[in-house]
Image (spheres, rainbow, N blue to C red):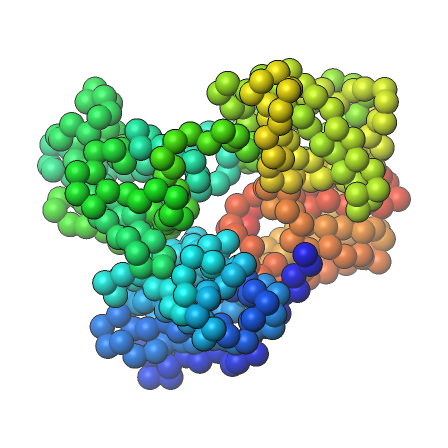
Length: 444
C-alpha cells in the first residue's frame, strides 16, 4: 500500500522553558499510522519532572509521518505513545531517532501488540545525547543490526570498545526491553566471569547468551530492543542505539534471505549497477542448510517478472530466456529452499539493481567531461545534486529502498529533502542521454 509522508495534524509542542535552559537538538519521531490515525498521540516527558517536553498527533489514516522533536541537551526523557481506541497502531508502529538517525526506541511493525498505551516499564527512557556503544551487525553481510530469529543458545554481541580493560573490572551492560513495557532486563558482564564464550578471546565480555539468564529470562516471540553501554573504571556510560531482536523457542522452518546489503562487504549487491550478458554477479546472504536460491527480478510495476534458480547464493547475470534489459531498474528479491527445490520459503526484502551494459564502468562513475560530472553534497535536510544535463533520478538506501525520485532539467544544483533517512551509504541513480549512471554518497 502506498503510504504518503505527511506532517502531523497537531502542531509540535516544545516546552519554551526547557528551550531557554539549554540548547536543543532535532530528534525524529516516526509514526506509521494505521486506519485510525486520529486515535494516535504521543508525548516526550522529562524523566525528572514528568512534565511534557514535546508532543504530536493525531495523524491521517494510513500515513507515514516524520516529526522533528527538539530535545534539550544533557537531559533524560521518556516516550509515551497513546491510542485512544485501545487497540494499538495495528498495523503500524513508531520509532524515535536521535539527530544522527540512530534509533533509541524501535517499535515499527509492532503496533498490534499493545492496547491504549505503549511505554517502557519502570519509567525508563533515554538520554540526549546517547552513548557511542552499540551492538554488532547481526550478520557480516547485512547492514542491519536487527535480527528476529535468535535462539536461546545464541549470543547478543556488543561492538568491542578498546577502552574496556577486564583487569579493572570493566565490561558491558546489555539492556533488553520491550518498547511496550512487558519486559526489561539489564545484565552486566566483565571479562573475568565465564559467560559461555571462550575466555581466550580478549573481547569475551561482548558476548551475552540468552540461555544463561537464570531469573527473568528473555521472553519468546516478543519484539525486543537491545542496547549496550560500557563500564570503564567503575563509571557507566550512556546507552547507545538499539537493535530490534526476537528470540524464538525453535528454529524457523523457513528463514528469509536477501541480497547482500552491507556497504563494506565485497559482495555488496543491493542498490548496485551491474551489466547483463557477461560475468557480473549478484550475491544473496547465504543460509546454513539451504540447497537452492531463487532470484526474482521485477520491473515495469510488475509487468516484467523473471525468476531463475541457482544452486548457490550467487547468480551470474547471463541467460537467454527473458533477459534483463539495458538501462532498466529491477526490484530483486530472493527465496531459499532447504529440500532441493521441492518447497520454497517466502521471498525476503527487495533491493533495487540497475542494469547497465555500457562498455566500461569508468564512464559511469566518472564521465569523460569531469566538469559536467554529477556531484552530491549533503545539507541539513538531505542532499544537493549538481546535474549538467536533463535526466531522471532517484535516491536509494543500502537496502535498495527508494527514498526520493524526480527529474532535473540540468544546469545547476537541485535540493532534495531526505527527512527520515539514516546516516550511511546511499546511492544516486541517474537515467539520461548518456545512459544510466550510479553514484554513491555518504550521509554523515
